[in-house]
Amino acid sequence: MRENIFKIILGVTLIVIVSIGCRHSQETEKVMSKKDSNALFEKATFAGGCFWCMEPPFEKLKGVSEVISGYSGGKEKKPTYKEVSMGMTQHLESIQVIYDPTLISYEKLLEVFWQNVDPTDDDGQFVDRGYHYRTAIFYQNETEKQLAEESKKQLEGSKIFKKPIVTEIRPFESFYPAEDYHQNYYKKNALHYQFYRFNSGRDQFIEKTWRDKMKNNKSVDKSELKKKLTPIQYQVTQEEGTEHPFQNEFWDNHKEGIYVDVVSGEPLFSSTDKFDSGTGWPSFSRPITQENVAEKEDRKLFSSRTEVRSKHGNSHLGHVFPDGPAPTGLRYCINSASLRFVPKENLEKEGYGEFKKLFEKGKK
Image 1 (cartoon, rainbow, N blue to C red):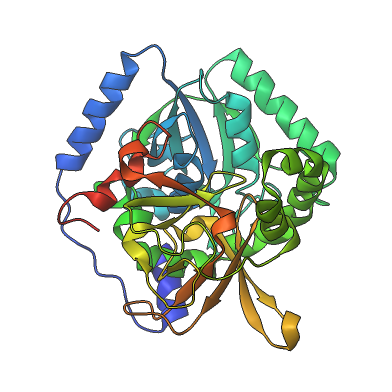
Image 2: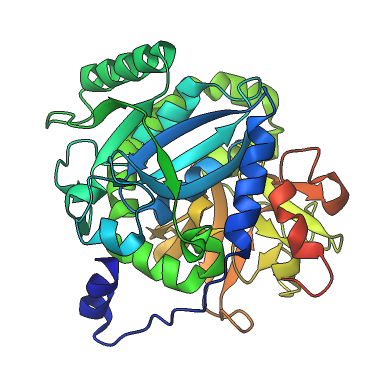
């Protein structure tokens, strides 16, 4: 079980299990019932190992209304986490994606799924071992089956993986939501989740496997990016340039809202974490979500620094330094040219409604 793995990694038990009520489960059932009655929404079910790690990549997609952690693939009814994690059932840790097919396609969901798992591992995923951590795509109709099989063939033909693709494509039978404390775990227990995720090896695998492909895809679109971006935006994001201090768009911006990648639109930073560093560049104490930020060593300018890039857009953003304010002690020094600002009043209509809670009174 994951808890035992953490005891090995940490040496001491760091996990404090909070009391679990039924209110969220009831609310989840109501939400699902509401969506079930709305013909616009459809469901896609995937098993990708730890369901904590499979929620974030789908929840940030425009057109995805909700992602629910749970169990699927077994005959046992209403399984518990203990039963599944101890191998007492045939269920796999899974997620169910509630999405609007008019805004996002099933093919896109398949693409995101493949890019967040190791489809060659038939005995678990990364640090998590056992049958219940295996990967699978659960199709609900013939169309989904055909699309899943075609996407698997394309992945095999791409030669990205040298080993055989072992992810199963199986008919959907049932899905049981996991216990309340597992839902949105990456939000409710951010520090614990980030520690687990980093030590699981998932991110390192994804970076190593897909980095070159993502770069190649970006290189194909260079001409389009030049048309889309201003000269300074292109220079900074694509050529790792640096804009002038105190002469950029957001260094002195005090409005409430979030900052997204000017190329990909992925959310990066929030005004709630922005502070005046006196450097003349926008500075933040932390990213809005660690999922969208990648860090790498930069040895340019005769020194060693830590470069910050967007995880999916692969845009150069700036650098991070260990001289920021509490509680992180970090200063993410970012180029305005890498960012687009979304005011809090526009979050919902631009597809970033999940971040409205950052600006609700008494919430952070």
